[in-house]
Amino acid sequence: MKYLHLIWAALFRRKARTILTLVSIIAAFLLFGMLDAVRTSFNQAGQSANGAQRLQTGSKLSFIQTLPQSLEAQIAQVPGVKMVTYANWFGGAYQDPHNQVFSFAVEPNYIDLYPEIEVSPAERKAFDDTRTGVLVGEKLAQRFNWKVGDKIPLQSTIFPNREGSKNWTFDIVGIMHSKDKKAGGFYDQLLLLHWKYFDETTPFNRGTVGWYVTRVTDVNQADRVAKAIDAISANSDHETRTQTEQAATANWMKQLADIGLIVGSIMGAVFFTLLLLSGNTMMQAVRERTSELAVLKTIGFSNHSVLAMVLAESVLLLLLGGCIGLGLATLIIPTISAGSGGMLNLGAVSGSSWLLGIVLMVLIGLLVGALPALRAMHLNIVDALAGR
Amino acid sequence: MGTLIETRDLSKVYERGKQKVEVLHHINLDIAEGDFLALMGPSGSGKTTLLNLIGGLDTPTGGSITVAGQRLDQLSGGTLAKWRAAHVGFVFQFYNLMPMLTAQRNVELPLLLTKLSAAQRRKNASIALQLVGLADRATHKPSELSGGQQQRVAIARAIVSDPTLLVCDEPTGDLDRQSAEEVLGLLRLLNREHGKTIMMVTHDPKAAEYANHTLHLDKGTLVEQAMA
Image (cartoon, rainbow over all chains, first blue to last red; front, side, top):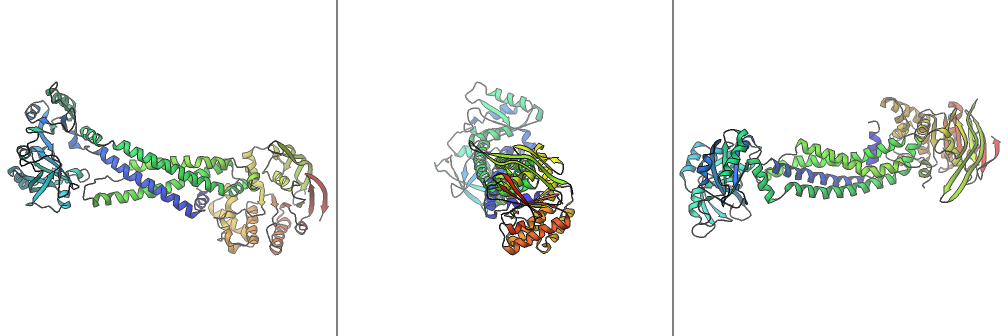
């Protein structure tokens, strides 16, 4: 610690260069914090206590393949199944195709399988009684200034109605609230319409559903129940694949994009560039200070002390920029999430992200400082003082 | 006074590519404790090499060198660094201060290698700065000081850990006459009042007059020994 002022002073010997390098490190770790939050959000999707009690059954072939609605009764007969429901992707957009709305056509008991969604009894009854009624998430309603009683037009990106038009009209009968605000971003963005109305109106895929959701009586029996459900359709033209909600969500997202791979590739490229950039800065900084390092050795600083000081300088540079970058990410992410009206539900930069970030900072710092530090350690005092 | 520095058949050969250059030839030298010695000679005569060997910055290729009873030619790099920290203060022609540190912090540098507390380090550095007449410039950075003042800070840094020996390589080579005389006067004070043994390389005969003895080197050999 007694060398800290010396290391700090050496770091800011060339202020402009150090600040520019710091800015690149800040940008890299800001990006790391944000992308890691995206990755974490994707990884955590579907992970909840309630989610553990739910199984999702979809087509074994692809998530876009539908299943017969008649399966519901058979699934309900499987021992260990407490409740079963089904849903179909609607693919709605409001006013502009860019205003995508997570909209599912569901059986009325769908809400019963999701205790984390809160709807007032009056609104729930209104939903059950209104064929064209929809329940909308709190954040979604705020986003489009919707309120109960509004008649809203939605354009399905996939399904036409019986007139052949993709424009559908619904009545908002209730607002859904997430009980768990932290994990409830998705439900706050959701719109639920009646599967029956949907199925009777669209000429597509009549009598079929997108997926089934099953609530099991005992979480420990989930695996057995899943196998029993899949056995119902074995060797048929609609074989199923039943998984826990968490696994199903992860698989579904993986079919969209391998977020871990994308984030890893981007960060790999960013950190490699950072390695070259800060490595160059450190090499220049040490080269400029050759005579000063020689003086330190003249005074009696050992080779290892000089090595440690240069490495510490490099690690300090990375820690300083990295912590500012991650700190900014920590501050910015909630603002972005709030600003998106709930469309983006990024989690805060977690403790594990900070830990990983700090490990990366130290590792990059050591890598970047290794070459100049070794050079400083092997510096010949006489040659360095003579300017050779 | 006893002998502080003793060299026997001291030789130094540098290899420049395939060529071997013998810079010092069999130097035999005895310097008494408390002496102030000037080392003169033309460029390339081996003055700085001899100074570097005596200061423990370089190792000889032949012969022996003993300072304060310690055979320097037998010490490893790490031990030699510790020995330098404890026994030698260095003053260079171009001051070689850390530009980003204040005068006070520059003077404190050798004390970082001791077990002194931060407060004690500050106190000792302040005393050293007082001794060289720069107590009021403690918070100034080298760029805010004149050449003479910078050299006095360098002298304060050299004496702050109370070394036995001061080695000075052209300490006035970059100074005007008045600053040079101030620095030389300071070195004489340190020699006479504080008993420091000083070995100074110089090209300037006037600077050499401040020393008790002058040694002349030519082509790596001691030529004559003059008494001041």
